[in-house]
Amino acid sequence: MFRDMPRYQQLNAASVVSLGSLVVIGTFQAADTSDLVRLTAHATILVAVVAAIIHGVRHTAMKPTWLLPRMTLILFALGSLMCVVAGEYLPAAVGAIQAALLPLLMLDDRLNALFRYTPDVS
Image (cartoon, rainbow, N blue to C red; front, side, top):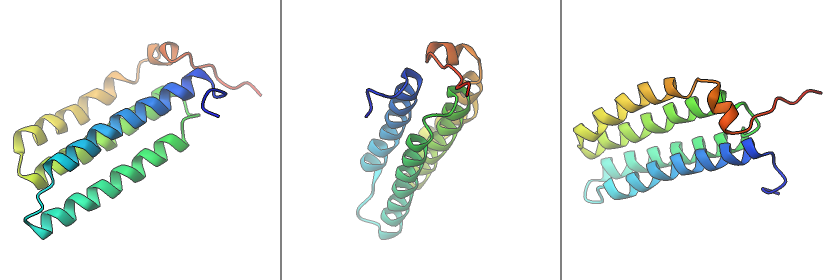
């Protein structure tokens, strides 16, 4: 099924999953099991990240310059929130800056060409 998809959809799915896996791994690394409130917050963020990954994978047919900036913003914002919950404020600030700047770099149409996006002309 994955091999039958157009190239840009494959790359969209791989990008969403790799971005999401970074946040999932960071959430597991920063989880504080000694405090129930923080553990609950991490679990909630983890559920939101998984939901965002599923949403992104389900929308891989979208144009890369539409999907990837939104997914980057959502996932980096959740990663930044996870750092705040963990008490790591410098990585949270860096994540917030990246959440603001990286999507702007993904709005260029060269990204569509890089992912070999071809609009469906039906």
